[in-house]
Length: 354
Image (tube, rainbow, N blue to C red):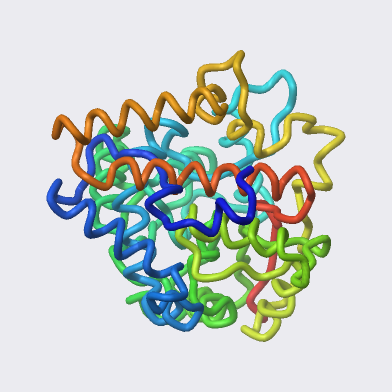
């Protein structure tokens, strides 16, 4: 993890990884990266109010830049999961998704909404597993295009569909769905009570809402400068307006009108049965190809390669910045996970009153 002094340097000095099939015109990559960075630079108006007010632009910029990196480095399910020692990475993600389906009691004939669906990896898994018909809400046109292609190739058009919309204002009638879920997506919302209230509006009475939330835990000390830097770097590296604490989530659910059934941090409660921690794919390692990129040598090699490809005009300007920002976020996630300051899997299960 970088020092506080290093992590306070400009976004140009600490950015992420190049999209391979980026939807942004190559001449606009640098402009998009600069605009994204400005959301977190206090001297350039990058305060919480600005991020909340411009959350759709913030999140779209982030996923326009990062989606291809996610797909190539992670797969089609953009989330974490605890893992058994005998379980593959892909299997752990699918199990994590199907757990939501089981807890909500999804079955064939039910109409379900995936709030913030990415490119549709979880949506397809849950639909196959449960037989339910699922509508994915996403405001990023590029991701919807990718997801539509995957659904068509899988022959799941009758069960899975996408709706381009702001999840804070879903263009569907009241009581449209039999259940709803969100997987590490509502952390992009500018107001957690408001998004929960919007989900509540779309559900039928008695319907379940489940999901995994990104939150700081009760070990997070807002008076600790290093803790604050970890939080800030997680936000910068993942396109988040802000991060709430775990204790805020049940309060927000009740304020939105839900009956809260369970709120549990699966990162902590599943340690004995899932010894491979959720952040392990992001840990530096000289013995694995995926972990090598996070080592000092790997970072130096990636930086040199991308810098050279930018210089030769093979990759557009801004690629190196994008790459190093994602690495800042990854480093902060690992440190936040190791210290128990952050969890990406605060499980919630709630119900709309009858």
